[in-house]
Amino acid sequence: MKKLSKEMWILLITLYFVLVGFGIIIPIMPYFAKSLGGSSFEMGLLTFVWAIGQFLMAPKWGNLADKYGRRKILLIGVSGYAFVFIAMAQAQSMLALIIIRALGGLISAATLPSAQAYAADITTKEKRSETMALMGAAMNLGFITGPALGAVLAPLGVAFTFYFAAALVGLNALAAFFFLPETVRKESSLENKREIKTVEAIGLALKGPEALFFILAFVGTFGGASLFSMLGFYLIDKFNASEIQTGIAFTLEGLTAVVVQGLGVAFAVKMFGEEKTLISALTIGIMGFIVLAIAPSYLVALIAVMIIAAGISLMQPLLNGIVSTRTNLPQGVTMGTMSSFQSLGRAMGPLWAGLVYFAHISAPFISSAILYGIFVVVCWYAFNGLLARKIAERTTVQEQLD
Image (cartoon, rainbow, N blue to C red; front, top):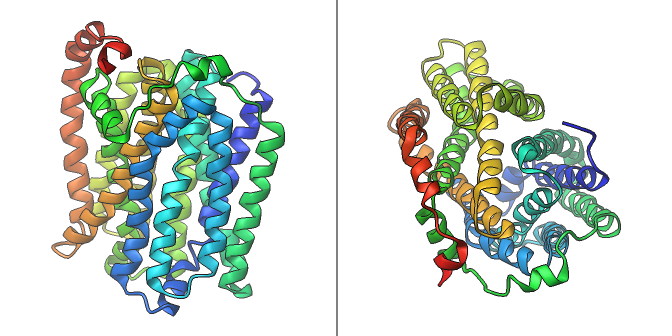
């Protein structure tokens, strides 16, 4: 990619620190929940309500980003996120913590679709997938940094860690306020007075020619969330892994994602094109899930985790780039709806993985491999004529909304 603009750098830094703040609290959340008398089920609810909140609100925030401007909605998401950390520090019961997390999911859903729509505004269509990959890399890097910083801060207390995360994200919001200009002109935003509700946005996405890509966003994050939620249990149950060994697995997963999204996506798209790269990403994921399911040793399991991370990291920014360039809907609505499908995958993946894990510890990974395999076949047929015909026959967004 050519030299990044100042706005793109600020956007990348913003997403990085948002994910640092998210990751900081990961090491302390189980202990905080336990101190409030929370069960393992309630701990799972903390993840579920967050993802469901994002699923419900991401298209709404994307629509508002089209109507009032990307910068405004991005600032609401980041600033609100900071206040959520403060509220969590004040929680005195597990119920209160779950409610706050749900509210956090609702308001933080403003961040990603507005940031992605902003990036779409300042980049060309040819560089869209590469730009989305850089954003993903920044977020993954933040997700790696956050837990490490949280582990360092943990001895200072739960409240201090939450307040530190709030301060970090709050300062980030101030930087975006002063240095990130608006990209949506006032007269342009007035053209988007027609509000597209969440259910309608999802319906339009599933009826449109890009429906397959939205569904793949769910499929990709479903598999990734299944891995993330059950990997620790799997390594402990199968290899008696220590906390350090489990931490190494998650770190390698994140590092692989950073490398692939920072360097691999642009190269793969240039060499093979978007469709072939997408099928390859699903195939890589299948290989990784199968290897993990039958891994005879901890080392082989680590290699499998890196393979899975490579496939998923190749897939997600590519999907974001494809729908951003091909959609007839406004960018904010499009990226909000995309984020909604991804959030649904993050919510449902852990629920499914936790359910089938009791049947067999490899079941979450085998089922993800089967799901990815189904969509390799679907994509193969779609990219060989069916999807092309649907795109040629697409109607304008005004006709869809009439």
